[in-house]
Image (tube, rainbow, N blue to C red; front, side, top):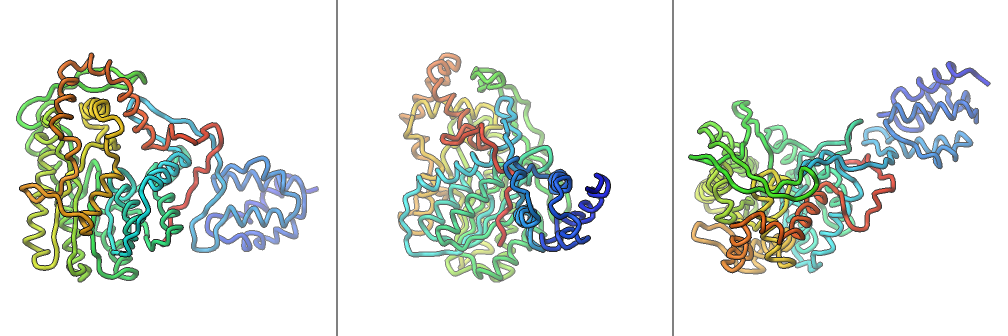
Length: 485
């Protein structure tokens, strides 16, 4: 039996390119098959080096099956890719949520995938026989995800979804949006949809070129562009300036009740924010307004990728008078007004005579973005308490949106030509009841504990935690490949 040093040298040589080389090449490299045999020491070293080199954990039951070189070859074939493809190694881990209040910094892959499957199953399958080409910017969460799944299941959409999600690292799981995208891609494939997913910075010129190259090559002209991007900052591709959005009131400070979960027990606190400066307002408009939306439409037009009757829609929100000082009358509201002006500019400008642009006013929802806005959590808790199961989900609202965009139902627009999906939220009777709870927030929360628990449950589910039917005591596969075109 050879010594450990010799075995390690042989195996390290053989596995030096394990991340990029096929399993057959690994086995052939350095005459590994001849030198390895079925030496138990070598097999043990192989397991150790595989785990170090490929950043995987090989379960004991897999290790126990390594009795021959054929077994090693089989394991390597599953742990390493064929040349030119992404690795899909076995990486089963038991993970726990890292959470403080509304802040959760890791995600659960099985739970994230389960939320997508549940959303899919809640959408009635009624394909309408069409298969429009759709470019969906911001497909991995919130209304973007709901719009994607509804379009796939009910309208047979083809096209490309774009998101900017974080892969797995040695310290953290991949983002929940990464895992949701993989689950959505699987459902799209099973449903027979030709839909691709690109992970890139949609604000950049490089990202736009990457996406539009794929669109042009695979799909041709685009029927719909849905803009549902949400990000804390944006780099202007023309100037290189990095703009950071802020959540602040305009004109005067903002002070209001808010919901706090820092001790995992809901309680009412007070929040005070100073008024934004003009520079902060303008920066927020550059991140959350219509500047990037317009660049996408112009890029499609420049490439002659606008189909006849092209329609584009950007998601926005108005909300209640209760949250208006920090939302609609604050920096975010200024950005949303910019977005709405952009819709008019697009319709009368680059789209004149060949398309139309709308903003879509959705109703309240629990999203990663909305949970960061002071007072929105408390307001949404009270709204859920009043509405109960009549609180409309993102998928229900997405169904309404697609029906209006495709002509299945008439367009419901307001005096500013915005498509309205929020009538259920702003119903005067509903708002009167929410206003009553808001007038005495401590007592209101005491009457709304079920709503608060629901809200926190929704936050956790955004990251794949607390999902019914998922066994969190079992190891989960954390290394999931991004779906390839």
